[in-house]
Length: 313
Image (cartoon, rainbow, N blue to C red; front, side, top):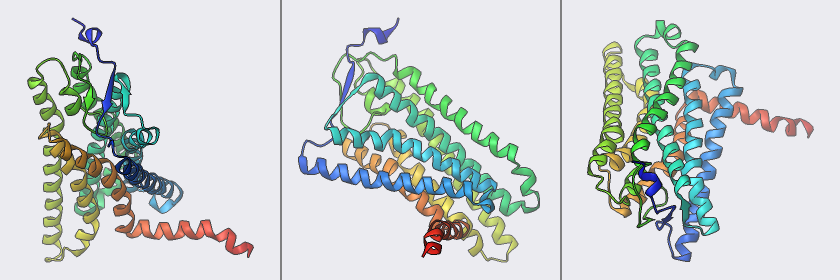
């Protein structure tokens, strides 16, 4: 039976957007400033990695692709919220809501794979330095990128096929800034108890397993360095601190959202801000300010941009 054709709901109302004019204005400027920072920060990383020849290494290749996914994720979520706030439009069509859900999970799934790939890159660099260029070959790096997109699409489709066929016959109010599986499923006209477990198993369980696997892998790297360097962990901490910070920022909101799939609306809004605004803004800051090669590249790029004006004087 095609339940989609029986659906009465053709649009959703995002009531998470405040009715208060003052709060409405605050949210517009808040998200606009953060989105501008996300766009500039991640574009800067991509541009720097492309133009600086000494950054043409596996780690920065993966970092550049992670920045591209961050750009896509922020444009799918934060940019849409800004548009709704600017136009004072709280209504989104059923199809646009489903498209937003699909792309959120495609890019989230892809980011998980890239974070695993970057952890593997650090493990190879520190634990198998003599074989690093052989293991992290260009072919391997491209394979990681292809795998990220394939896993992201499979991750999204495996949940999307269940939700798209749910009957929505009213109500249609989503108490959030955006559309996602937990919020939309609550509006279905059938019992979604079983589907909740699908969400937990697919998004929540995968997030938890990936997070703890990455943390264990970083602990293993630190222990390996500690054994080899007679207790000196400072170099390893400097190398891994940015990666560990980003892993924590990315997975903590995901586990709250999907392991506990129906949080309170206030918590859901806070997690949206943390996951799609603050985390995506901090990622480029962490990878540039806490990375010596990136700082050097930033200064070199700055001189290259300022140079012509200096010469003209």
